[in-house]
Length: 466
Image: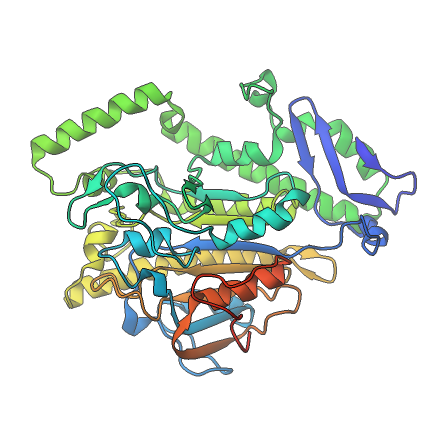
């Protein structure tokens, strides 16, 4: 076991549990506290996550009433248990997305504040770096993973002939460079392994991959437990049990899939080609919506697995920056698993004012908010130093468009949770002036996570009254 000090009350924040094929970072423990003030020590950091919801919201059911005495709207009602930990923002807009038809410019430019280059080919360019990657470049060197990008749908292909944009833009909100998007990992097992397993230099599978990571580090964990006080032993037990529970759920999902999501790329490619031929023969207008309309695994469980992996990444300080896409732009995922919903997300979002579709649209929006609330409540349960994991984080949730029917990019729906170690005043609705740059919020978030940035997008100063 690396870096454990001779004094049992002083261990490094960078202490790892190690075993053949596994490297597991630890949560913040009281035994690390004496080193927190040291220049090279590990005081509790601020983490940042950005969660993207496609297809906008039902506008008349989104905005809460009041300011400091906020009353949550019907869509935001699932956040009631964490109401004091959130900041709902109104009036923010991404000026860079005012041009261009459809969803793509509002998705790939969501975190960059720029206008993407219109193309039907693979020569994609967002003309900027996303704010998560600005943070990762400055604070990511302190963690195992500079950043983590997760999602639910594979990278889209082809061209959307309705607006003449390549569908590649639908699948990316994280951009390391203007021409280098970071793809979302959609397989929870691979995402989990990136946090806790060691790979060979070739990245190949090892025999240890068939064992629980806890079994691989068990000897190291037992030695550490003997050096910790009772409070830290309980914290470590809770952390390890949470890892075990996520492993169990990943295994359960894999068993349900029968290995489907882990098939070799060449087999998946053949399946994809077959799906395309079938869709063409059926005369479907949207192949993506047809594919997503087929029965899937429990989508709620899949999303929550991904969120629990993000939480483990922050809790273990394996990463401090993460993004998550609930779905690609123009996502046609079928939400018929929700009571009162019959059809795909994108189609329902084009409600044309139809009351039945508006009600279904609202149910889909509320489901997304409920998953966000699930993640926040889990983070609030985790004690860390003098606060909680949520207290030491910023978790952004929103969409690049206000209304899915009109593709309106003004006054986009945005919620920010967590107070970044007391740097943000939560528990309120902050009404900003119409046209206030969304990027001014990003500048404020970057400052609070410890990253320096000059003008960003159309913002030259951070958002006031944060």
